[in-house]
Image (cartoon, rainbow, N blue to C red; front, side):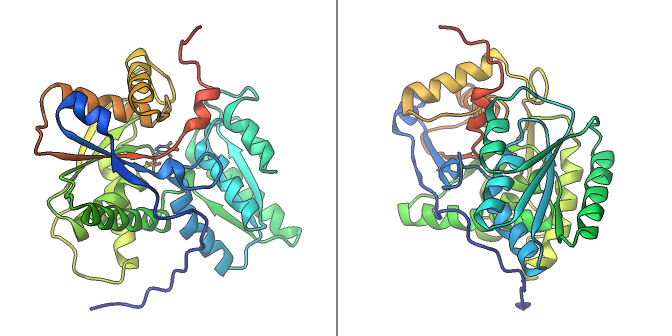
Length: 326
Ligand SMILES: *Cc1c(COP(=O)(O)O)cnc(C)c1O
């Protein structure tokens, strides 16, 4: 039975984003590798947060809010894209940055400035403490007759997840048009919302597809994602869910969240060299590198159709030390 869904997303990105086969890479590894270019979504340097923000900022708008507050590490793509999207909607944007990552005025911090956002550097890296700081900031703004809206780290709550349920629908529709059934999708798991949305979307539209989540931090993802799925299902207007959502987590934290490593940089160079596509050292490079390892290990054949989700992140190329020299 269909329930009435009242959530109205705002339009921010250019969709559908491109999805196509990586011919050179596929030939090199004798399998079929495709890419979904959410890095080309058309706001700033692109990235997965734009789809989440369509729902989150839609909610903010519906509630009459005029100021958006969110958080992330110093080089957060999510903060940068929130400021970009807020400016596009005529809202004020504030980023409360945790005490982690590259804090020099580089990469996404430069973009934060260009988008006219206000940046607060927190002394904490504890999510609860930072949430308390954002709540206090919101209370101050309310006293000044502003209407603040707080978005959690990574935009990962039920509304954000809806953006990737929608993306999954888009992916399978594009596959159908190409006559291709993706039996594997690879996605980065950072705060979990993107993966949660893809898993739900695959469960609803292509239950045989295995979505593999590559973890780039040490957070307890199976629990986090399970909670996000539970929170999101009531918003979907259907009760026809699979009994179980297929999930697979593989870690590629490497030297730690946000820290680049040689193996990742090699993978970034490989895709750049073969296909002219840029990955980043914090998220997509680690996911792509793990996926390539699995392909090299012979886990896939010429019958497989593997989709890599490009979630953006190029700003980090200009901030994070990748050990590259002339
Ligand atoms: C945030 C981010 C991710 C992770 O997405 P989550 O929904 O937080 O798990 C992946 N890639 C890039 C480039 C990101 O900025």
